[in-house]
Length: 110
Image (cartoon, rainbow, N blue to C red; front, side, top):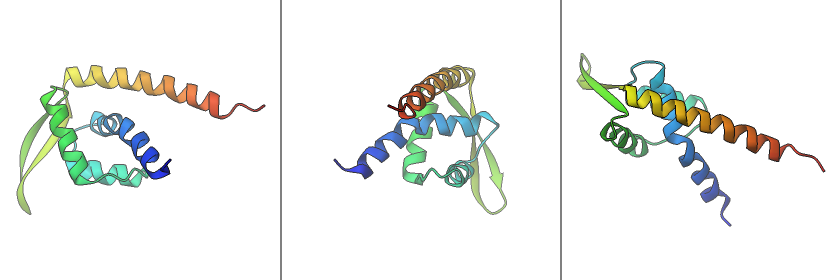
């Protein structure tokens, strides 16, 4: 088995939850999301983030607004919709349950 592939699959499984966690705190610009995730130790590429943001927007989990920028093109800021807030709560509950279960199993001694 390839450990890199397994680790990558584990990260992909929680990526949406992590992205929504950042946006839940307030409007977020994609480069700020990338920066926060990298600071937390999650390596994510723009080529991964943008399609996920688009998919979440198309699923009505996110909305966005444009803001003019003095240093380049307009910026797109994302925020959660009501549907996105509910989805986040469900993901959070699932994450908490999984986290407890995995920690329980991985910390058991013989």
